[in-house]
Length: 281
Image (cartoon, rainbow, N blue to C red; front, side, top):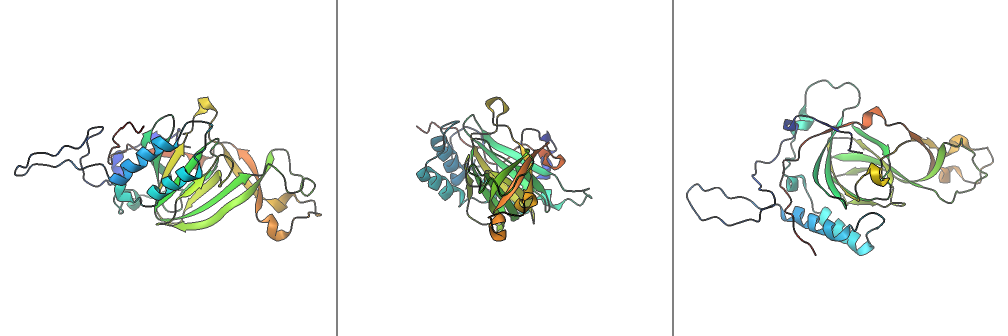
């Protein structure tokens, strides 16, 4: 979802004025008049990194419930300030006219073969279109704003194969979420086949979202991102369906589509506190 972003100026985001030295342990400096003190990386961010190193075991694995709980406990406490971000962002205050849907911006905090940490910045009305996460477990934490989230999971055992007969390019999916979330709220978790693996974000207000993906997207490892269009379940009913009207609202038909124009994102350099690489084992 973030591989095709282009680079833009880094001054679109206001970072808290801190100096962080990467991959160096904090050393207490001798007291001296006017001497600067190098602050530590926020404890909760370092805790998240250590937890990710322990929880994500690579492709083909799904974290057990105990590890999911551990991750959520850390993520639920996180705030924009933990990433050096001010709650008042220049990014959201642009006065230039924007044609159509505003673009989403993202920044990568950390990435390795096992997991990645990314922050998405969505102006009001911005959309991250309906897309999947093949073979991935993803933790999403809404750090700021109000977001509408719609998500689906594939139906591998159709409700009734005789009820509806859509064209072959459509595939049945069960609606997992279709609600508005307001920060601060609980971390959401999706899995390779459950939890709303195919989702769409629509910003009702300016939003910041932290995504922890394990493993990250990778075309060479068959974890490419695909996009979809959803159609109501009733659209292909043959008129004799055994599924009630109320139940039909829990399903939809998804059609894979070409990469939509509004999926293109701008990438900026991460200038916040740097994670300290450690041996977690």
